[in-house]
Image (spheres, helix red, strand yellow):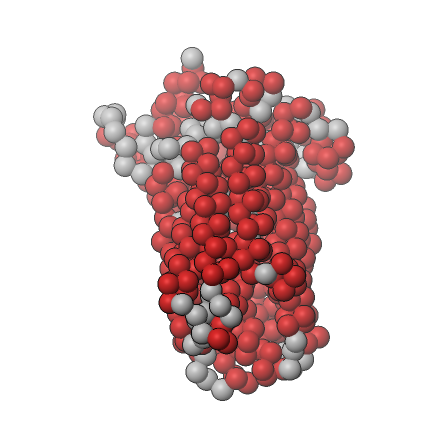
Length: 512
């Protein structure tokens, strides 16, 4: 009963406007705490803007890179897909870095690598230099994908976690949109200059992020507890909750969660070494408990299906898809690509307001169903459209663009942002950073598979056939969510492991 009352106390003052009357002073303090958590989340999400820009810029730049440096389709396919492989390395290393160096310093390291990667790529004079630049930028992408969700999940109050955890995905989509706009705006410059500026612009924001991260952002209270800094953790919790008494209760919950494993116990009166990374890997992959096994299945399954649905094919190769739909003008193709970016970015705002109200399951189910339907329509329209060089029926081209836009919208409703907040909140504290890294690694592997095979796949089975395959994967994602994922709305991070124990099979937990 006491725990329920504390949770109700925290839920009374969410970041978004809520109902009910309470003590005005307490609500004002809670609002101030939520505002502080929001500011921290916005700064952390800047890494996602940079990631999105780096991810999307090659969509429009690749044609000019080919013309300037004489690179073939096969080389472009490897260059773009290899970035995801590099980010796989980064995501695996990021979990270790988050645990050892802290979430904040890991974010600064990621920003530094983004700067270096963009600078090297923009100055490249050949294919080897391009690959070197994308290697550094890819590792930075892996770091950014891991550290931002972990940082925000650990900083956010339970009542606002869905809201705040959606911000990195919004930021990432904003970065992709900005890259499409840069591609469109700079396309008219000489081909030896335009793509270099498209890429090089991405080197500027990381400088400001690194400074802000090191000078202004706090470390997360959960990492501080794991490393024995209880007083500092209490100060951060007081800032994010706005209530000293609630901060003390939350601190005790975090300490109790950290002490569940004897090897991970952290004394409040002396600093101890964090649990070795080998123990974390053993608990995740070698000897996981039943609840950890189910959590890991949920995390890996969501990451697999996000990329298996083919979102990378449209993010990275939208101009090629629209060419096959019958759109021949370069400006029209880039304009349609910007439309996808606008739709994706605008739609991502919906989970920001609904994740803590409707719940994660309904949004994921709606998203997967919409993705499957829109991919089928896109496949049908591409099959009806003649080859681009022969001209095409306007309706087939328009339907293709509309279906691609609907796919981006429904993807952004759930499988874009919600899987990241879901994965980062269900992993136990002692396994969160490494578990998020493993999930991100699966995501990057699948993204690489799509990125490195899409051109070959549509040449083998046709553009329409490729999207039929993606539609089947989206339908399978719907079944996976329905059968395997319980609802997590309104639960504290310390309650998640119990949710995935044997009682998680109960229908009441699936819909709560």
